[in-house]
Length: 433
Figure 1 (cartoon, rainbow, N blue to C red):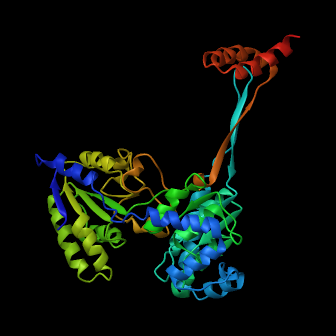
Figure 2: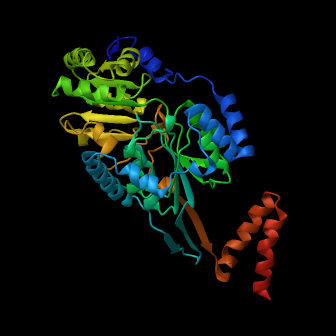
Figure 3: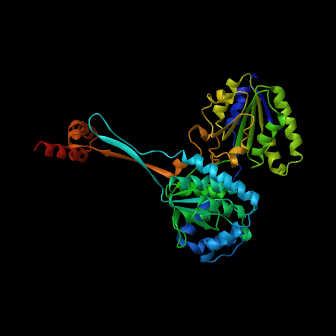
């Protein structure tokens, strides 16, 4: 059964802390296995990729078959159903518009002593995107990772996607075409991360790797970080719904289950000012689970990690929400924008009764690659900024150096860095000659 908590219970703080500190990631330690795979690919390149792909995905490839040809992409993506094509086209256009508005501007100014300061933004040269493969894959994730990169101006976007037994979802390839992805490789797992990070004779290395994957992929991303950048290490998905008494219990139940059906380790939490609504939602969930196709996933998620919390006020709900720092937050209340003013920690917020989290997963426009496991306290979802670098600029005139130079000499001397001071004094001496 899910956990029921009441804020007025004397032991509430203890139970709430247990929720905050609970571990839901049931993945076992795969670091040593992943480390061996990374070393193997780094040493043997394409040969290792081919052997590991045969071992894990049961498909024999040649060097030439590591990548999809343009003809293959065109033919396979053409098999997509027309309604899926229309939906992906709409999603892509909305995601592009949303992310174009995130592009920052270069800035320069001259301060009161004549020093010109500023910064400029430049895109990464190459990015690798990991996409889970097989027929049960997510073309929406292709859009969410690739479009911000292309909007940022990344010239080369390479996608890796495993094709177990040679099978792939045509919608994934169509999403790649719509997103403007430049290269697609039919490899997955830790070996694909290694190829992107270190490069092989057939795959040039990238500067950053983004995209979700299993425990092997997550471990590989951790281990190559530093050699390349990564987006984040995502844990099991989560949603928090804050609801007042003016709600349809079935709607709230479905919103909670839409997250639970992702993963047995996913977490769905309801915080409500109405104990009655909480009870009704729990009953609706039990009813819906009996007919839900993914009940074998959603059921254990709700059973093991589901939580319903009763609070005296929406103010208190907001405070608890900020402590939870959820990946997804729904504000199913009469005045969601007022409550939004009190929210400081959340990956993405969905406001009002008509904005379920599923909108953000697909066609809302905002990105669905979001921080999990309370990391929204200090990080944000994927954006154009993840594919840009900020370079600061400084231009000092001779007159300005006369003003700041002596102070630089003083600080350099206090830190015992003689050459630093001399680099200034030699220039100041030239100015007095």
